[in-house]
Amino acid sequence: MKIKGTIAVVTGASSGIGAATAVRLAEQGATVVGVARREDRLAKTIDACRQHTDASVAHAGDLSSRAFASEVVADAQARFGRVDILVNNAGISPPEDPIHRASDDADSIMAINFFGPVYLADAALPGMVARGGGCIINVTSVSGYVPTPGEPAYGASKAALSRWSHGLAVELHGTGVHVGVLSPGPIDTEIWEHTDNDYNGKLFPPTVVADGVVRMIKKELVHLTVPRRFGAVGAIYPLVGRPFRWGLRRYAAAEAKRTKTSSS
Image (cartoon, rainbow, N blue to C red):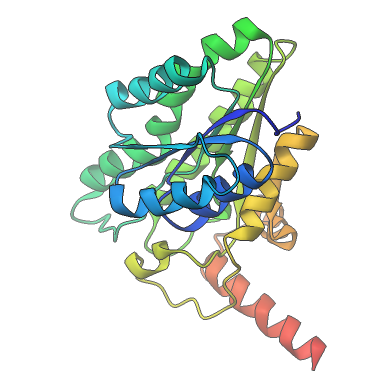
């Protein structure tokens, strides 16, 4: 799918992966509708997008609300006539306490990480299918395939989004609408400030994910892991006879150490 001239909705666009993706799509010629809760920071992202496509706009609000998700798509359709690309990137990873508040953690995390993308897809798909074209990229995480300490609900939300996305891709076969899943490894975003972890490996820049999104759209890829080598741990995990007690973060730390040793 060509990106130039398209209308692209990008969520979580106030910082990190979402901001990098919004700007990268604008550089490719897409008019961006940036969505996030933090209006001031979202405005800065859209200012950067307007350096490339001056009609780009911000739409601030809470994606855990189905009404707001419908409003985002309806406003984009009213302004531009359609939504061609939807990048569901918004996500939260607050500290979890599965012993004392498993239900509350799951409710709040699933509302943004899983149901937010479902609500937006629900609003955007009828128009895409009617036009016979469109693209939805759902940003998940390698944590959706390999458990990480302190994040049972977060990992579950990403696993749910991944499996739902692949199922949706099957359902939409032949309609002209493409659905892809992009699973990042450890990316240098604010999410690490809110997570209690012992990870000390390399953090990769959000631009590697933004570049992955562009690649997925253009080549209509169904699944992509960035950086690519982190796909290996997701493939290995189901084959192991007992849980990876060390988890993704320690795998990443070991991988970073190995890379440093081999290059020295």
